[in-house]
Amino acid sequence: MPEFETLVNPPQEVWDQAVKMSAETDNWNFQSEDYKLWSETYGQFWLVTAVEKGTLNFVASVSLARWDGDDGPLYSIGMFYCVPKYRGLGLCKPIFQTVMDIIGDKPATLTGAVKMSAKYAKVFGFDKCPEHWHVWSDVKLSDVEIPKILSEKYSTKVWTEVDYGALTYYDRTICIRDRKKIMAAWFNLPRTFTRVVSDVTGKIVGYGTIRFVGNKRLSCAPYYADNLEAAEVLLKDLLENIPDWKNHTTLEFLYPECNKDPLRLLGRFAKSKEVVSTKKFCRSQFTKILIPTPDEKVYSLSDFSQQYV
Ligand SMILES: CC(C)(COP(=O)(O)OP(=O)(O)OC[C@H]1O[C@@H](n2cnc3c(N)ncnc32)[C@H](O)[C@@H]1OP(=O)(O)O)[C@@H](O)C(=O)NCCC(=O)NCCS
Image 1 (cartoon, helix red, strand yellow):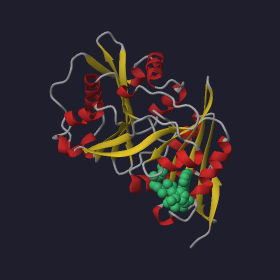
Image 2 (spheres, protein in one colour):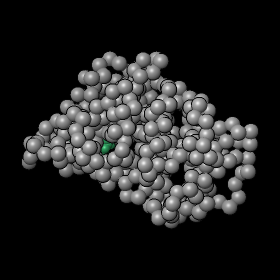
Image 3 (cartoon, helix red, strand yellow):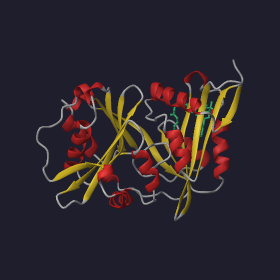
Image 4 (cartoon, helix red, strand yellow):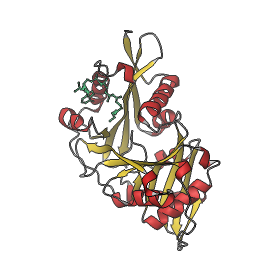
């Protein structure tokens, strides 16, 4: 058994192993570029990792961002992950404690995986939670067929063709905290496609991002719409503007289970309802105040590491 050491904000190659391993074993949906983005767009960012001593061989990670807002800082914990062969050895609790020590008694949030959620609440006070869990639904792209008839009341544009002030205004109806800078950087990432859907008056009624993630999957992150018709038009246009979208493996959404429209959306695009698979995945958890979200508009979370909606 090798020895281990802790590296804070390690070289990119350590992060890249975390992205690859977490996609392979747990279908997580991060990109190589997320590390730089989080480091540059949040007030402060820490990636605490365990590696095999004297090497950059990735063992475990946890990330922490300080997101400053009008209401003060909100800390978000993410990327809590250990490679399977080193799980259960007690390596992860101390790295998690490291980020909790940085947070102190400031407000914090995370999205707790099903098997860990109760522990976060009991041990670290992440006990302010919405009633619902977030569920994960996916469908193989070979089972996707774009519906022939869709609403004519909505149309979409690439996000860069839309007034960013108006898009930010819409985003504030989803996320009450200002994340203008974070989202612009997110949309600008490579292998990332973002479109905005508007009604006939030009009013923005939703937007969606599809990212290429591990194992040739298409991850919808985030995806918001005021109603199902607008969400359908958005998905059609997003897919049709992705080169070779059919050559990818799956299309995925992560959404509050109290919202049934994401499943209806996938049902409309799937060859049959049976080919859509759904599982309970995680829960938003806060230490101090539960920040409300308009769940009926949320078809997919932005990122389940540093964001809560
Ligand atoms: C979650 C994960 C990182 C924990 O790794 P680990 O190697 O089991 O952690 P440790 O050996 O240090 O933990 C020892 C014990 O403390 C628990 N523990 C670890 N971190 C903890 C935390 N932050 N809060 C509360 N309990 C924790 C473990 O569940 C384990 O409990 P058990 O003995 O009852 O099973 C690992 O299981 C993993 O990578 N899972 C897949 C990804 C995932 O679901 N991550 C969580 C996202 S929210």
